[in-house]
Image (cartoon, rainbow, N blue to C red):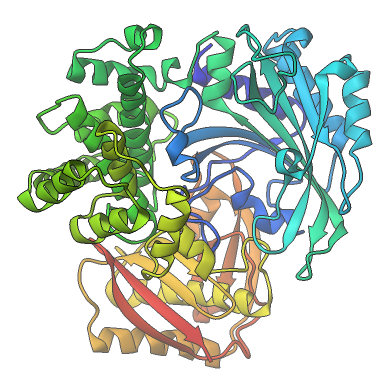
Length: 601
């Protein structure tokens, strides 16, 4: 089975169960201060999980593109990927555990023809915060799973959320495929990491709400959130030993084989795990970087936020390319394969192809100059000669001085048989937290509040971004497009496309337009319509690619006084009266992208 066949089967199945297919959201989350990337299908749906009405209804399904960087050290093994596709279905206060589990079971056993004997599941065992999930346990038993294959685990294994400090959360039930691999012992079970059990699906039951005091209370509304990894399930269905043999990964691996003159199949069956891991890292990292850069809110490699992650991914891939003695520029060649492989399902890659390839070339040329510099080489050579232990402080110095990511320093240390200090990652993250906003860990620490933050001030700031976006387009031109935003209850940050620094006069014009609209106390209204109608009516925003898909369009003002019309999920104030005046400053974010930071007072 191909990934495309799996996607189609899944979406068709849930359409038959009265779910509406929605488009994948951007990899760069809108107005979510807790994460740099969309890490799961539920992220774009947070307003609706909190009770807002979704224009497509209360049963949804999609294929969401996701990026997770927390497991970057594990990339190189069989299953971990930085970029991956997540199949998901949601119940927004509609069906509950019985229907959700039965849907999962039916799809796996009837649509994918997985024998029941090849499945194992886990449920939440209960603790002081919430009781044992007996309901899910009994549903699985009724479906024919023996008690020996229904495992009970604690919060670490079988609890989701909240995503921020507070918000929806609840027990989950994970589904595992039992491989033909030999068990690691008599007590081998899904919680093992031996590879006997491969997690393929997760049903999350959001029945609790964690408050500011850490209490878990029963939620006012109950939602179901599910997720199934496209690459992993495709690999399992084809009896592949890892993700890198599926059809969306194989062409990338084949290109790396061509560049390295090595055969992936021989590396799998051989004992050179270093080369096998290196080939996987190159494939994974450049694929992820390509997908992030090719996103509609895509960013260039830099030392800030998402751009820092892109730079880290590309530079680590280059490092491994050097181990393989790939002497020519190669990142853009692999990016081209990624684009060709994924563009049919993600057409934004085709639209942004030239941008991706050119930026890949620039970044590789820049990094090659660093690696070839005597400054870098002499400094690392001294560490090897002295057999020094590599600490986070040493790695951070390389990062600040030479722009070398910590993962590359760790890789080089292992190649040269140097010890790496305990808690290296935690110590490095601490150093990064103190160094402005340069890492995911730093961003998470600085912007507490999170996905569930729809308080009064956050809502005002969210509405203000619409005014700001519209004013920028009126003053600077319609080339201005939102490239990302970040909102807390204390300020907003808005990134937009513009090739040069704004003049003082332009800044003043934008500020005046926003504050004039606020002074008029313009109304804010919402209308649900198709994407096609939204375009016809002049709405701006990220449009889905599915014909007939319904969206929410928020309009600020009436008649001749309409100042903004934008596709958005919310939340918004009902009118502009009392939200306060906008005061802002503008700065560079990355090449061709400007950043505005603003407060309301």
